[in-house]
Amino acid sequence: MSDSVEESIDLKKVYKGSRPIIATFILMGGTIGLLFSIGLSVSFGAADIDFATVWSAVFQFNPNLTTHQIIQDIRLPRVLGAGLVGVCFAVAGSIMQGMTRNPLADSGLLGLNAGAAFMLAICFAFFPGLPYMYIILFSFLGAALSAGIVYGVGSLAKGGLTPMRLVLAGAAVSALLGALSEGIAIYYHIGQDLAFWYAGGVSGTKWEHLKVMSPWIIAAIIGAIMLSKSITLLSLGDEVAIGLGQRTGKIKFFGSVVVLVLAGAAVSVVGAVGFVGLIVPHLTRFLVGNDYRWIIPCSAILGSLLVILADFAARMINPPYETPIGALIALIGVPFFLYLARKGGKEL
Amino acid sequence: MSVLTVDHIAVGYSNTVIIEELSAAIPEKKITTIIGPNGCGKSTLLKAVARILKTQKGAIFLDGRAIQQVSTKEIAKKLAILPQSAEAPPGLTIFELVSYGRFPHQRGFGTLKKEDLKHIHWAIEVTGLGELRDRPVEALSGGQRQRVWIAMALAQDTEILILDEPTTYLDLAHQLDILLLLKKLNEEEGKTIVMVLHDLNHASRFSHYMIAMKDGEIITEGEPKKVMKSENLKAVFDINAILMTCPFSQNPICLSYQLNKETECLLQTVE
Image (cartoon, rainbow over all chains, first blue to last red; front, side):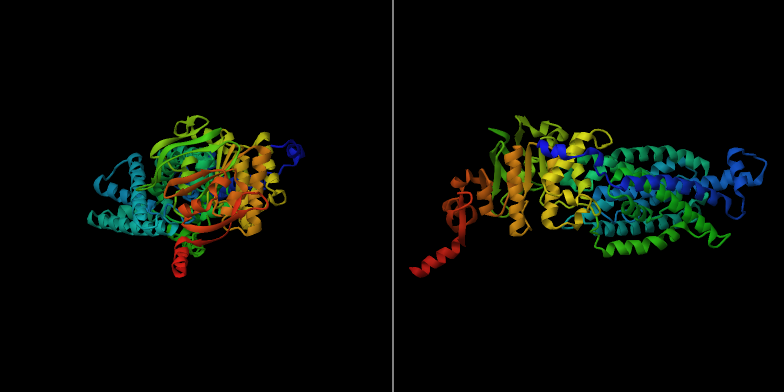
């Protein structure tokens, strides 16, 4: 490096980009929005409860009050469940999109969700009454199983894995596993259990679920944040990442494990809801740029916000009935998918 | 003197072997260009040297140590590669892309330190991108984009730069522009440069050392005056070339050429 250039650089005036400011704003504003929407979601429902009661139910719980019980036993776990599900799908989608440079990567589109749901059907049919602690493990396994099949089917084709081809393989495997799950449900008369598990979205979430899934999710999120810088490099392409001294195989392996845990955990609570992992990472990337050190935490916040609001809408559209949350999210997700697909899947 | 030695390597993709056995030594602080017809294994050789492809046999030595035995991050401090079709994700600014070149020197979460910023800014200035550094990479022209990737490799602060067809898809002036930049980096910063070029005249004009390959083997190597001979070009490309001296570099250049079979036809008609 020649000295003249070195001297001419005034380090104080160095441009570092405006992205960190936007990202910090999303993290802070998003957290406030999150708290607000949690409050909103807890107070409105079949019975409307004012904010003051919500506050006291959380911080000065009185088991003799029905409203306190509704909040503590039903609404709070539900909204927290929705938030966690949003975090899981959004972060899983971000990692998949970054690692594979595939703008259409989403745990729903690539069949991971269907795989996890299929394993849940097997659990209900063959091991009825299995504690949730084990159910979640089956869910991880299911996600891994379908990821393996989709990847295998996709790479069998001539010309290798293109984004579109992976999505097609994901759709085929999802359809197959979905049909098998239905078949198992009908044959073993567990349709109602399964339907109860998902159709209501996150409504069935209990503290027990949260206690079991939280450690997994926290561990996966910590892993995701630790991997975030490496994922940014992978998003430049494998060859560039290797050239910069990254051990790409190792990063891809750990990234995949994180994705499987996140998708599996989310599906075990909410069922095979798609598109969260597609929409949120794109939106986040648009706002904060391509640095996954920001994308991962920001998409976690925005993902949980999206699912909490979707769940809130699901309850408010046609009370006292609940609209399936998956259908609501698909309402935004499908047009978004079509838009991305039209752009030729070239965007990443 | 060479820092980079290729010792009896075999390389290829999953089930096709491209290079069966090849040895070469890359001279230090010189510009070395690999030439040869499409599919002869030029890029494969570069990728093997840059450890993107694993060698099936033999070894590549960097500063006397086999690269398989050195941590990949450590290699990245000595050797930077610019792949043929590098494509930046949308929205990435020049500054951001160039800053990723600092990865091998960073620890932990990768906050940019003073030292990193110095290298990034130097790389952006020396490639003439200072005015553009906040622009998104996809908004640049092909020549500018190539400069950004070179800047990223420069920010990596390595002794060796490897470039796979850095001038492809650029017009005449921009090709020269990139090559002059590489020449300057070689002369002023003492960088060892290894690249693949398709333009023989550029290769001859800007290289100290040339390696001519065909079918995964080296046909001839040496300084341009030794390699750029009509019999060599016939052996490598199957062409009949008319050579003359470049008025700028005094190295041989190819004025015009015919396919070998074309010439044979002509000779037959004459007879």
